[in-house]
Image (tube, rainbow, N blue to C red):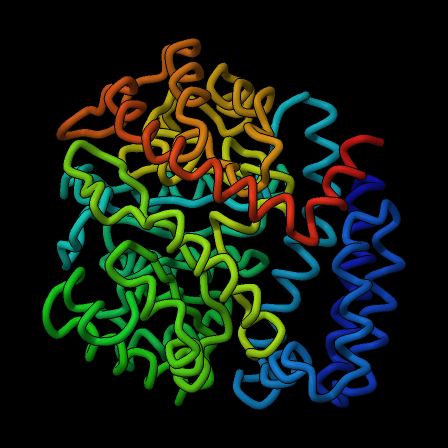
Length: 459
């Protein structure tokens, strides 16, 4: 056994002992867990996270304190314990240092998470959905998925996210993968309509699977985009998960049609009452030849999302991620393996779920080979694509960057039915990007993160 393996095993053992104490008395054990985590963080990678946690733990009425404590009242003990082991210990405290070591050794990006399309099939047909462009006959075989995870964990990646199509069309394979890799944490972006009592019981059995249910606001907005009756099926799924004390969250795509509803306090309170512990907010992306540009939010609507999500973080007991507006916390675009990547149902290894170009396929290349190939290396060299952290994306806000990368690396369109020429994608995104600049600059310069980012990057 190598010295590295012995060290990781000791850290894992120590972590599990601490987590055992959490179940006995979380009020006393949480500060001890934080102190232990700080000692393990020898390179101060998580310093910006630890500092505010101290303040949170000192205030019992803080919304974040209430969210953390709800994990003891609302989540089954063994599920909670497995989540802490996999997410905090394996994916972060053990996985992150291993990734950083290998990044330096191989001079390429190594991701914290891998997003995989289990299938291109779906039981819904949502307006403007890019996944529908792939066709409905593609699947990643179980053996391929299993091998991806084995390759990934060897490189320090313990977080795996399923998408599609509708990933729950592959329920049996999801549960099988979770059981085969108990040291990994699994999440799925799902429309939620296939969650039933049987699947919830299977989730309780494996303990390391968390659904993020796509919901577009309330009934009218959700059914407008996803089909009549979808909202009520989602509500039923949430009720099942809450009753069985299983963790889940929401995946919310904001468009020009639903910003007011989706950003409302009423909607946030609805998610919390339903039992959601987190909410991912995604900006609609005009991907594919059949995209609907009219669904793109205006600069004023983006400003609404930016301000309201930040205000809710000070008041609401739910963890929120605004995928397009939180780049300041991660230093820009996280795609191309910098923090995550996407493997579609055909096996194409793409930089991002929204960037449908590739120069590698998992059936022909290992993960590490793909990370070192021209497309991903161009991402590494180009990140961040903009010094304004509210303009992070090489497609939506810097379309010239993506066009240049695709042409320079000879990456091909991965759309199986209607390949999209990168010049056409550029032409579709450029007016939108230009229209966002003024508002983005105004918001960024006045944001609390601006001075910190400038200071950090001028050192």
